[in-house]
Length: 387
Image 1 (cartoon, rainbow, N blue to C red):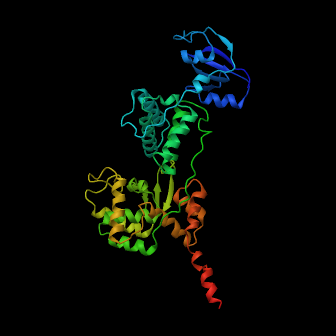
Image 2 (image 1 turned 120 degrees about the horizontal axis):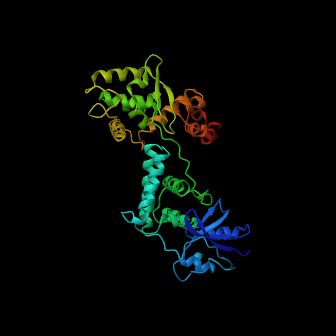
């Protein structure tokens, strides 16, 4: 292993210890374990916090007392450096996290939220990232989030899997939040490159068949509730898209529904069913107070209907229809796509109607479409039919 060279410098207004060595994978791995270590594009080397402990480990002057901050450079060669820093035992993560965020990390929480706002992420993304990052900070307690190394992040993710027993999807969400913090807030380049993600289970979309949908729609007597369900299934909309539809988004002349800034801030146009148009007209005529801006509104007639209320409508309708399947509001969108596929509509057109960015997302419905599968004879049947 080549000998490193150490130098005390002022970098971005702070006293730091430069660690210079010839390209070496083992030294790079060791540096990733050092709390507060960073790679600098400007300096073209690693640098670590200038603390008495680090000075002592590197054999630099000032290791026994507070370091003098300045521009004076001290250089020293040392083979077994940083061993005391690297080999310090790391405490296990607590079995129960605190309900509060330590003042040590509160500033990081504020920086995290500010950066999310500046990036203009959607409200749902900000809410998810904020919640996941808050849980992370609560778990850390008084340990500064900015000092965690790659190995400690891995320890935390193992803790999430083994102790908290979080699902793969939840861990992915938490990793996305942490990746945003370390790479977008702290500016660490490819900080998560060396951290593997758990493989997500391949789950097929859950759908309702046409008979179940008819029973459910027939069970709903409230015209507003029926209009919400009809619109969701008839146009393949997400619950967030349904409740944020505005009156002028319904174009009866072109028989189109304009969906503005949907998931991924992507606009799209979907077809307007005659049945959906008819029930929407009945709903507008009967609704009091009459909607002014949003198509589906809360009690005041001005604010959009809540997603939670729309989801409750679906659950009540499902229960009234006697449907036992474990499905939610989003199954209306899944059912829309699957039924179109079974009617022979090309998957590329369905992709555009659903607003998917990647055709592979839409192709999941190929696995649950049964228009061809039902004609396949089981080998058990043919075993006896051939006799």
